[in-house]
Amino acid sequence: EQIFNMACSFQVSEAGFDHQDKLPEAPNPEAARAVLLANAGYMKQAGAWFETSPIEFLPIDPNDETAPTVKPPAQMAWFRARQDVGEDVVMNQALLAYASDHSLLGTALRPHGVTWANGVQTASLDHVVWFHRPSNFSRWHLYVQDSPSASGARGFNRGAIYRHDGALVASTAQEGLMRKPA
Image (cartoon, rainbow, N blue to C red; front, side):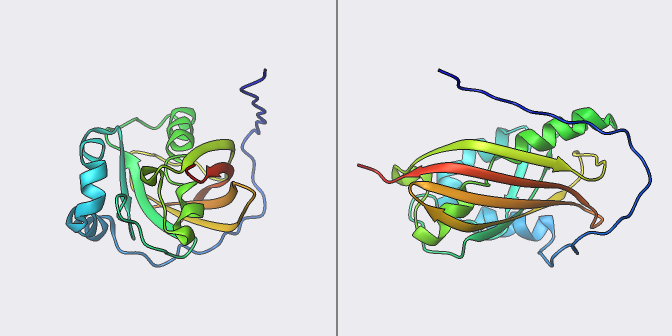
């Protein structure tokens, strides 16, 4: 029974054509933090994790995890490593890849007014990350996520990760299990 499959490709850095989508408008990380701390339902569910996780994660329009409401299938969040991880490109990409799984599947749950805290069974079935530009994950990154489709107990999600200076550093895609409680 196979439970893990991984495919990787690598490229030597080289000059070429360069363009990207523009960084969308979003509140800055400190404004996002203030809104998050005022969301009692979110903090009740995520409080300890919020304070101790090695990844600092600030959703811009968080759902109350204990009493979620229907929201559009899109969300944004600021995130970064809590501690300096240096300039090593591979280490920064590894941490960014790890952190990119945190909220992506939840994007597909938003239009249904549920979260994993409501007993919905969720699991990442596949997760893809494409790196476009180097980045230091110790600095703030804006994670822009959307979910164009959910059906058959699966949700499809996409993400764009921007550096604090507006450079698009990575794109993500994920299909995840979203099984209703019995």
